[in-house]
Length: 291
Ligand SMILES: NC(=O)c1ccc[n+]([C@@H]2O[C@H](COP(=O)([O-])OP(=O)(O)OC[C@H]3O[C@@H](n4cnc5c(N)ncnc54)[C@H](O)[C@@H]3O)[C@@H](O)[C@H]2O)c1
Image 1: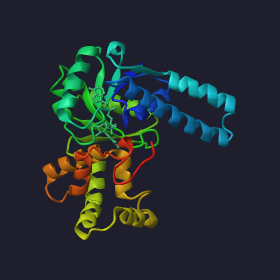
Image 2: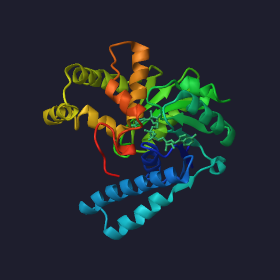
Image 3: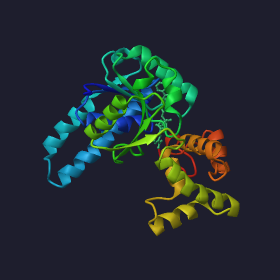
Image 4: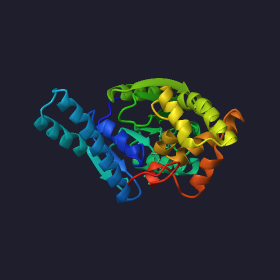
């Protein structure tokens, strides 16, 4: 199946960059959120990412500044902002990127089932939830698949293509092909909590979260040691702030529910989320962030 037009639902931490990755592959993409303010933020993110990528090419003398300016307009111009499903009648591939809550995802999948043509593939960027449960909200469970990007989606090349109980082989293959059109690297994986990457990442990060709380170590100190050791580009607390503490907490809770206490849920993070401090996107988390 060829994707002539795509859509992304949810223009938050992930959605704006996912739409940018699709537009940069020269495919028109609708970017929908519940409020114009969020759509605008997603568009701004796409604009910034595009500017950064093209500036890199100008610096390497692969493009002139004029070519880069024209290309930026072309890429961002392929993103169609939306707060309704009016533009979804002719889409071929949709990526849902709304917050990590099953009842919300199911509501969105039911709406997408009604708004899109019957051949359209409905994909979820979920980090850990069951694709099969989302498919239950549609009349086309064979065309529902996980399509899990990593943060930041404009840079990270991996996409986990997650097969639910009823995902057809054709859908999984079409999703893997689409990932390659986006110049990404698809890996096919089964529907297990955390899939592949978050299961590995969270088992390592769990130990750092646990020792920090048990020993009362300063979070900035943990981050500094991890970054200086070069084991990772940044420490786990700063990373969690960038990813969004509500998303990180949901994934951690889901992994603990699924696999038990070998996965740790950070109590300090739970308190921050309870207070509405979600990290970079709300301006405060483990750290303060400039707007
Ligand atoms: N943040 C990450 O690092 C990351 C990485 C990979 C996958 N994910 C997954 O991507 C999904 C989105 O995460 P995020 O971090 O971008 O969340 P986010 O909170 O930053 O953004 C979610 C966006 O969805 C919008 N939204 C809520 N309800 C909606 C609806 N009914 N219709 C349209 N838009 C709606 C919100 O207004 C918000 O702009 C989650 O499933 C998450 O697990 C997140």
